[in-house]
Image (cartoon, rainbow, N blue to C red; front, side):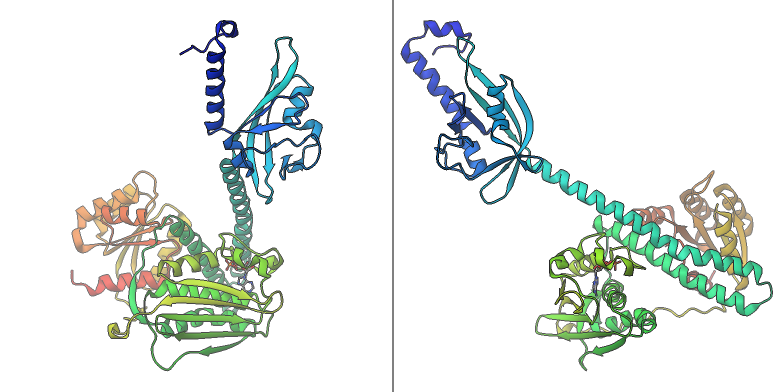
Length: 525
Ligand code: ADP
């Protein structure tokens, strides 16, 4: 076999050797998975594509792919740079020959069907023995996957930026009245009516802030597939009722008429009560939000042989058909609805859909267009009748008159600690506050709390270590409750390992704290 080598060896090759070399070169070019084009005339009237290039452009392998052919028809594809057609004299191969230079840049190939392929393109002129250019070769690298991924990332990034802007806006909304209410309380010494009014405002706005934070945590959990369902067999009508109760104030405030239709018999489903109620109330609050005051909202619960359905319909502003598929995307709020999205982050529908999907169900949206109302259908697999469950155990009612309890609060934020200790103090409990981990252990040793609410991130000793030491000191006589901003499953696992009995995210519900204290006081010891 002749060796590859410098050109002068060509002089010593027999015609048969030359033929073999040409054939092997041709085979390499044709078989290479790299798109390659070759022109053997300086005007690039004929350009031949190897198989990889022909299939990339979706033309037959024997086609002349020149965009400057001798006469007649040009092949049905285009070459663009940044979305614009490249004029014939600036086409990479033509340009390389005319300017006697190598060319290297990114271009787009637009196929006959309009689809776009992004390529890195390198062209090298070919010179004869006299230094004259007789053609050129062009080699491409397909960048389409990378480009599309980049565009996807940029789009996600843009939506995240928009989301952050919405988030700060949504956080500011409740903060402003809370600040004013505080000022009112300061000025209204003695005027109980005024103080009560301010307090009620703060409470309302606070629950709003808590809802936003909960949504954010849910988004994080859901995107990391960390939502665990607590399924139970339950009558779907009860779930719908609970969702209606949660959204009733909003529906009433907007003067909407609500009509509910449900069968006489139970609709048994195997679901996480809280999560499905959350999904239905998201649909209901959207219906209330995106419907002019005085509108009509319908809720229908029904079942057939295999599935249970909840349909929420409204007579509201509707959704343009083209945008329907997008409303379930994370952080999406339709531009035209922006001024009405108060109280929302554009995550409600994403959450609802994913929660329902986790149950093996689906949510679909339909609308006849702007101004013509919307309809959302939530479908769940049906639980068979034989497996009917007992009634769901009701949430324990809170008894505000618990016997006094020794409570330790370990919290490095003075405001949070003071508010919590005031609240529990008012309810008659004996409360001590520690501002860091070491202090918490010291107080714990002397005071022997029956319940300890412990922040995790604290100076000198973190909450996990505090829990370990308190458990060692007091054994089961103390109920250890982690009180933290971190509510992910991993955080919950860590606090369990450190010996905590419960893990609450901030801000805790006063009722829940009281319930935990009541639980502890009921136990002997
Ligand atoms: P948001 O917090 O903005 O309400 P969602 O994820 O719940 O977020 O909804 C996404 C978008 O879908 C909304 O911003 C709104 O544009 C549109 N949308 C949702 N429900 C309705 C409805 N019932 N009628 C009209 N548009 C709706």
